Length: 123
Image 1 (cartoon, rainbow, N blue to C red):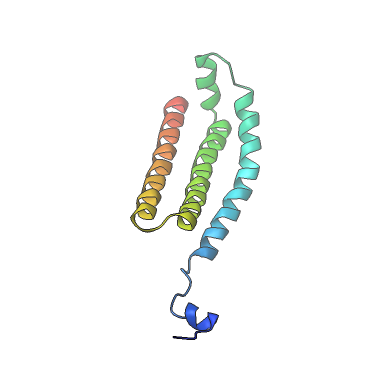
Image 2: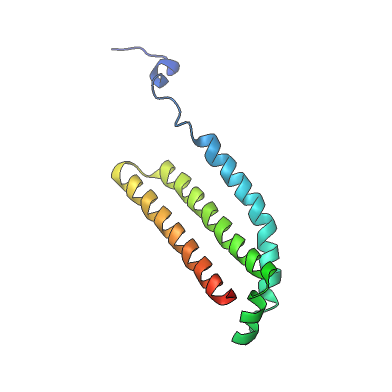
């Protein structure tokens, strides 16, 4: 029977070396969203329910289009990082890899679709 201390059992396992980076990205994107979401609500709320021609003219202006685009991009990056952390905590093996790949693809596809729709609307 081997008698190992907790430190000896943990030797060689090491850290993933990316936890601090993930945490930092989540904090930065959370602060960005705290600023962008109210701006998006105020810019989107005043045009909500307007006819199509007014919406196109409104998003033809740079400020509302930039706010909407940044909100989409930052929100999807925040979602991707948060979902990846959650998946890494609760899934193992092949399921973990497949879920992370699927979440990343979903996040980038949503980001690309949203920005493409915004560009089509603005131009």
